[in-house]
Image (cartoon, rainbow, N blue to C red):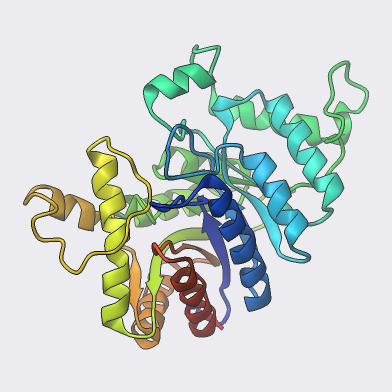
Length: 330
């Protein structure tokens, strides 16, 4: 059975923009957190593609991955994920071929199929709005990285022949089944879709076929976390995330807001259970409580790795949260 001592732990960053801060501030915080995570022994540092969100600065994900890799030395850096239907597979092969050539052996390519934005922005991103088969796009991307494409009329340069680990990411059952069929590592977004966590992992493991990429299933789960020195402090800091999700469902700005002492009156009776439902798999509290929750989640899912997002409003509180998480995961 898995235990937290055997499980790898990683960081998921959306480069959050807090109220009162600039995008430049967010990027500086990202670099500092990545260096902090490297010192603390985190395995990888992933950035997520989102568009047209004034509280998330990771839109140009490949560019930001290069920035983080340049500021660190050993930690793996990658995408959690690149929303492949927004891009031509050749472009992604070239971008990640470039990153792998600059930072050999440190780059991951996690792929998702959601737009990472609203419908209007999706139409602005995708000049060809015809339905594209995600599985075919993934296979095309693999081809551009393969040695077999070296003599093709169209090839990724850089990219051809490079061994870049490719992951499939998902918040539904579709990518779970595809990842299993292709024999790829799979990461489930339980940090915002906790209700499908166990079903998705079961689908992935049931459909898994060994491949040249992976001999046995490898699962990573996304975990929303808020760790502090005391339980009450963590619960207070978590209200910033409640406010973010509340703004999201209302179609409002999702810049990271300061925490509040009481959410009463800020959400409706219908909104409260919906927002709290997004945190069904979250871990939050002081060191002992967080350790207990993480161990229980790892035991339940038998995950090989956890990738943690922790975004309190205050950057120093964020650094401290990851310190505590590293301590309890060792």
